[in-house]
Image (tube, one colour):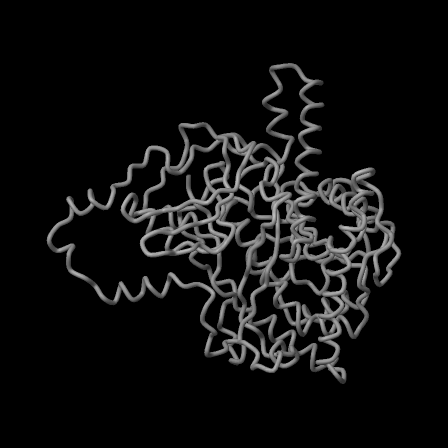
Length: 502
């Protein structure tokens, strides 16, 4: 549980540690070896004729759902103003009747196999990117009990095994499609040291089969599922139930589209509003001496990507907050995905929107640049020694290569290599460095790709405008080499999705 941290115990950053603390993005994700093997195995066992056609049909179904959702938002805007919780029943959908209404695309065996072959690696990579950031922002957080709502074929489960391989004890999966459940079980057949896994058809079935003390989960994840629910009322009902099942952290992930951003923004606003209302009621019922204790145990704040808990500054604008994760395509993706007359690239970029919320109050951390003094370029030149004028051409070329993200097509494909069993897919990465960005409001978020022009870097940053993180804004930040060469070097190496210190 998050707690208020006294000012005297704050972490002191240096120009060297700022970069490692701010880095949250991942250049390219390689799908785990065991998952690639499991996908190949299930495709061999359930190979069906005309797989390329089925993959194309699944892709068209997703596009049709997206188009319908965009039309739905326009056609029902007047109704939402009159009644925000009114169900939207006119969507052109595949119908699955549940207590939540229509749940969108019905995954039969053909759609499930096509999903495993084409979409599962990308979804797993996006989930890995999000959960990896949660681990970096919460170094002491190690979930033992996890709920995966809309689990599908188990993309979140595979990401969890990479991020927290040792702490997981029990994972509850909620997935209404029997075909998806069977595929997820087949993919896990050859794995060892798995936590206790239980599958349920709905949240109601989960709550009926679990004791009240076992219903709370350290981590609850809902990935790529809310967008298939046409009713805003049903989405709010789902998220409220998921929040009630959350003991610590709730993560919501949707495709990186305007519709996906709207869903994430609405659910983020609703949870923050709901918890603030409960806090006000608790404060009214308690005396002054116990208000601080109540504040620590109630409320909610955003862990990522937002650096604040105020209204989203991109609402009602032409921009929308989303991120991208590049992944190396597996051999099955390259075999079944269709390209438009050109050779299929060896990678693809999965765009996604997400929010991670935690129970409690946002820690009151000093801003990372407080008390730091940076020399200007003239001051640095005045202090330099004659040996500093020597140029290391190799370092110069390496730094230039680092400045160009998401540009080159990988030549070799690691997914085609038959790896030996000695490879440890849980190998610790550079994100285990000592420097981590705290949860205070002093870290902004780079929303789009930084623009480098000559000796200046322009970045679009979502940042907090108040020390307590209650309000935020979207600003264009320009860093020049002459005024601050240290931050300019960091800006040139920053990527879309990284943090930026204030």
